[in-house]
Image (cartoon, rainbow, N blue to C red; front, side, top):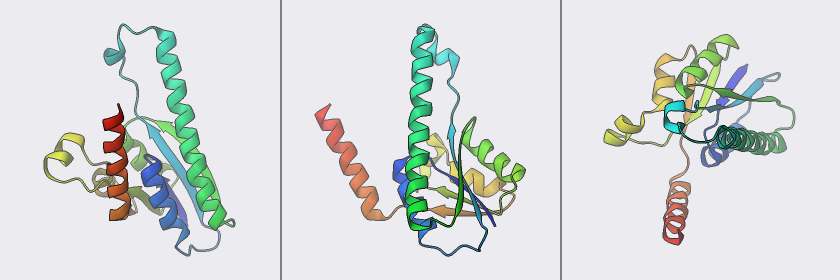
Length: 163
């Protein structure tokens, strides 16, 4: 079985790593762990020195690599027999995930969900909903536990108070 895992950030990475680690997978299953970097929009960065833009892009890639390594380590520690590859891609997350699932070809996609609805979903979009609608295979949407969501919100609020 080929399972494509799309990880957005550490918060969802942990929830997805827990989900994957808690399930039995058929022998020989292959996992591809991806993180999609959205392209830097030149018009938004016009006027910044090219060295600064290159440094920013390098830091994004370093952070993405660290994220994938962390999630891969969490999964591999609990399930050392799994074949797991990591890859950083660039583009629209919705499109890249669906295209990767078609090209590889994946039999299951695992993504996280913020659980936004209403105006939040409209303004920010929903990668998981778009992937679910366009995927060539089954999609598992993993939501973090409610306790984890409140801890993340509390940490974000505390950080905002310190700044």
